[in-house]
Length: 145
Image (cartoon, rainbow, N blue to C red; front, top):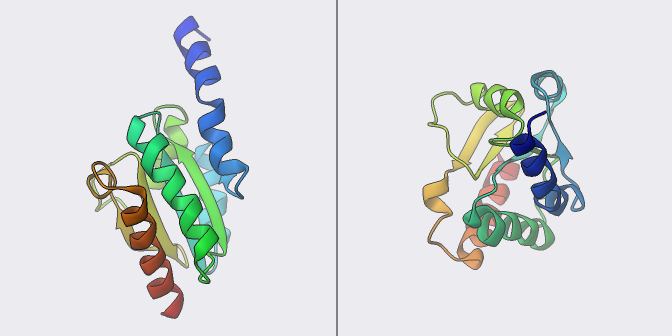
């Protein structure tokens, strides 16, 4: 591993832990993504994580708050890390290929099918409360289907 990759690997540890300590399973390989998608019945909340400021200050906190406040808990919480686990991220994105790549972003899947997608444009320049409320509404709508 080159020095840059080693440095970045160390830098992203707390960014990964912010989600994994809150119940998210990290999918780091294409195979893990495929296994999850093959077995995932019900609702999956997928966070495409990123090192950018809007992931740290907006997306991750909003997702965690939404999960704390909603009664519509997803059956599965998973995350891939854009720019770090490239194969896993590309494989996850292949399951909703009609949506342009975006990170950070949030996908809600129902029985393996994309039910709703929140791209970076709906995260960046919005506040945590707005993103939390948006995701909460989405989770409640999808669970009611």
